[in-house]
Image 1 (spheres, helix red, strand yellow):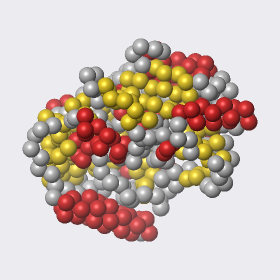
Image 2 (image 1 turned 135 degrees about the vertical axis):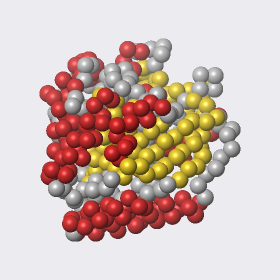
Image 3 (image 1 turned 90 degrees about the vertical axis):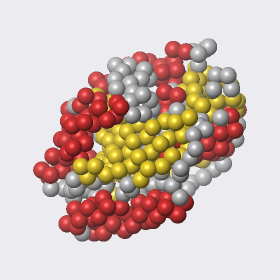
Length: 436
């Protein structure tokens, strides 16, 4: 299908007018389109839900919309593994997995992405016993630059799985993903405000003592909103938030009223400290038990820009403290909270947690505000602490600095040279972060 309409991502940080938009509904159709792109000398990229803030999915040539490549392919009940088509949205997974008594081991707080987009950018949740979503991948099938299919799993091309499972879209078009699932479970969630100066000294101990822990801190306030989740068997009696209460907390207050406050702060920056103190009072102090996906994920309708860095776990507290000090020193007025999470180390070559337990610090700015100075200041701190930027979130790093941050960086480039020597799947972002 030919199309000249401009594509833009959710955050409105990237836009492009591709030469052509195609919507394949089968793997064979993807193969045919890749061969056609190669023959025409046009780059080709698959785009998911557009939730990356970076240009990782920007397609200047042929843009592949994989919404037609969605759904469950196979289920291995004994191994608790499921194979999905790459365009399957995360928010569809509960309905697909629940009939088999299965769930994903961990999720981030957004579920609008496709499974291919989530793993390709290193999307993650929180919990020191759990890696990012890509660590749940036990098999991946891509269409390579010559239009052939390549599958890496426990039986074939196993050595390539650490590259294909988190490949930035640089190695081919992902068409199928096999996930290692777990028996369905519920979460006992406790959300409460705590003084941040009391929280930070005990942060690593808190994170190590529970299944899932994270917190948000609104700059210009003394309070952090902590979120603690304990895993319970799937047949545990549920005590969910009442629908009316959920709507008030998550829709009216956390999104509707907060949007108004952010707009006010962008027009009058001097109001931001007062606005944040008011926003701080909107956050919940609640306890409930619900299905894992309903606890992990939240609705985000306030548009923003985000940068997130992964630092060695033992430097996480230092990273947070230095960002707090920087905001005070520069007298910035920052309306959006800072988010802090943790994850287990893994063996994926381009994972931000590759080879080390990791702490994550995410900074945000309302979409009407310029994030440049703030993000540059935070990035300098994180880089000094050995940080790695989230591939799908804003950053200014390039291949020369990222090579130093990833022990397997050159291993990945060798696989890229093998699978896509002509850079059919390349774009300006990948040229910057991986080199030519």
